[in-house]
Image 1 (cartoon, rainbow, N blue to C red):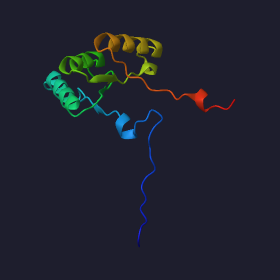
Image 2 (cartoon, rainbow, N blue to C red; image 1 turned 180 degrees about the vertical axis):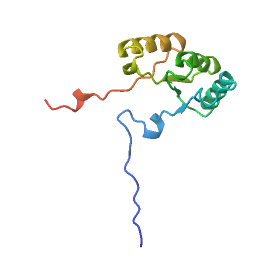
Image 3 (tube, one colour; image 1 turned 90 degrees about the vertical axis):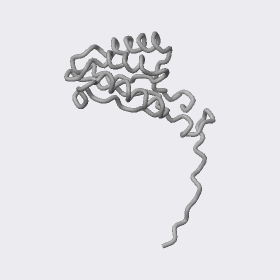
Image 4 (tube, helix red, strand yellow; image 1 turned 180 degrees about the horizontal axis):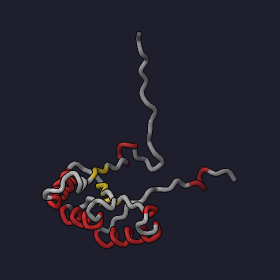
Length: 130
């Protein structure tokens, strides 16, 4: 059966970039449970590989059974030039309150790299009716 193929419509975003140009890729830091032997070197290696592959950041898991994510993030920062650790905080599970987590993350990121990854909020006023 013949199939009609059409060119996809232009997916240029309002800022003039295509989705591929604005896509940020994140890798995942290995867990201390799965790679307990020589874990510090494993973190550094994965961080360097991720940066070399063009990743923006690396996800660092948080759990009471894992190595402290802030210490893991320090190893990532020491091992790379621009890779940004993305710590998966769980404030509702008895850790620190969400407000304190956010303040700590902002201070940590701003002090070390001067870069803070933020989720961009849509401009709702631009799309609302008068």
